[in-house]
Amino acid sequence: MIRFENVSKIYPGDFMALEGINLKIEKGEFVSIIGHSGSGKSTLLKLIYAEEQPTEGHVYFNDRPIDSIKRRLLPFFRRNIGTVFQDFKLLPQKTAYENVAYALEVCDETKEDIAEQVPEILDIVGLGDKMEKYPHQLSGGEKQKVCLARAFVRRPLVLIADEPTGNLDPSATLEIVELLLKINTMDTTVVLASHNKSIVDKVNKRVVELENGKIIRDSMIGKYNV
Amino acid sequence: MKLLKLRRTFNEGFTNFRRNGWLSFATVIILSISLYIISFTAILAVATSIILTNIQDKINISVYFKQDVGEERILEIKDKLIGFQEIKSIEYVSKEQALEQFRKFGDNSPSISQALDEIGDNPLLAALVIKAESPDQYDLISKSIAESSYSEEIDKIDFYENKEAIERLNSIMGLIKKIGLALGAIFVFIGILITFNAIRLTMYAQRQEFEIMRLVGASNRYIRAPFIFEGIFYGIFSAVVVMVGLYFTSMFLAPLTEESISGGNLATFYLKNSLIIFGSLIFSGILLGTVSAMIAIRKYLKI
Image 1 (tube, one colour):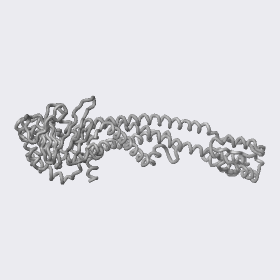
Image 2 (cartoon, rainbow over the protein chains, first blue to last red):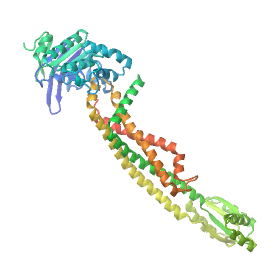
Image 3 (cartoon, chains in turn blue, orange):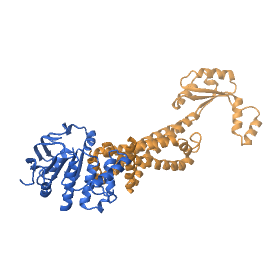
Image 4 (cartoon, chains in turn brown, yellow):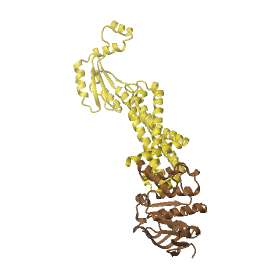
């Protein structure tokens, strides 16, 4: 489903973020990308949702090179991919409901469809009773759940989570990991980047380890440390 | 679906416009000044050219014939003159008509008609009133008549000398156009810059929204449209402000321009053409706003 072929990414200033990456992620997989800060985890993810383009090599999505997608059509490609980040990226002046609805609004969904889908997804993440709360009224874990709801509401093929638990306490972290696993069981490929040992161990699925922009380990069932 | 998108982006654009508050206000003012200068110049140019045509229409040469020259002879000369390219029209005014006009002219002054009655005989001369195709040909016409074979029969040639006034008006109009164009260009530039800046600030304030919009897969058009609408709002509001401004200007200038434009003054001219003026204002306002928004989008909106 996602395939990296000899991908290198060099940022301006000759900073080599990724080097000769070959990676294949199958549909329905749950892949944890681990490594220290600056090891290239985020860059790898950005290449998947076309925020960055590779300097060398190609990234394929369903056998189609992402860099061949016309700029005009990129937004439609991105609809296949849900994203969750450490810093949430919620709109502070919108309620939980509105934040999730927003993702549907900008994709031209009708009000009726939105009214149907949003409560459903918020129920799935366990925020059915907090739909009208604003982000500042929610805990960190709840905020991240709203983000998960927003990312998942359009049922993307892939969910990308970049350090989703970086700002959360252990119990909230656990809840988020469980939600990610739940989403994974609903036929969604999940790519998780983290340097949190406990959550990678808890997931207990495929682990890809990066160091200085290179893959140094790829184990099908793995722990953070071998 | 299309309509839904249009409505949503339109609302976003209007919200941007409203939330910008003072910045929107300042932008509208500057944009208004630009539009005002341009449109005022345009109106002035149109009005001056109307006044000019009016005046040009009033110039003529009157060729007065001596008392003893008969009507037949004058008409003969008239037929000769009509062949000239430079001459637009010739009107024969007989002694009797001249007297009648003179009496009418002196309507409110009984002393004139009294004097005329006293003279008994008609003292006025028959004349040919000549209009030229263009004002700069009067000189030539009057000269060639003065040097013609029948110059002996002519009492005098009266060239109603408006030429200087016309030339002055012409050069003033040219100057107005030049200054207006230069000022207009400068202010169009400033207007675009200011609008562009307002939109840029909106973009900056909303950078988080963009990021999210992009991440959730909002189409480029969906992301851009609100800013185009914002620009359009600046344009429309400015057009309305200018419309009101021009109205007061024309009222202010109305007494100065009384009767100089056929059928009234600058105010009536403005009111009569208000629809066209408003239409062009709205059009240019929208154009300016859109151009500014597009520049801002091109420069700052990463898709």
